[in-house]
Image (cartoon, rainbow, N blue to C red; front, side):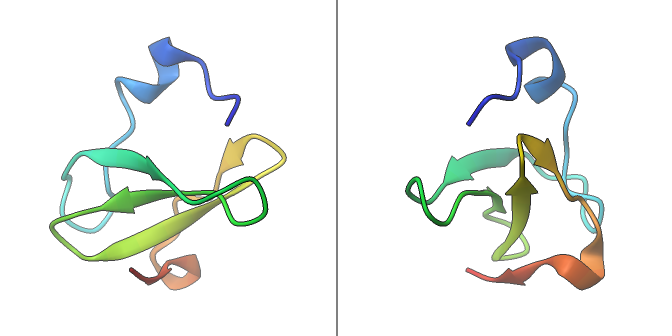
Length: 57
């Protein structure tokens, strides 16, 4: 994943404001929220932090 660390520090889950962690392999990358148990996709290095785009963890 190519999200700069400075950006990663300010990203939070849009649903619960919990911390997001990297999840997945090279083919299926995302940012996971342990509190909500969902994964937000990362497309072309850009996190898609839309609640309706999240998938179950």
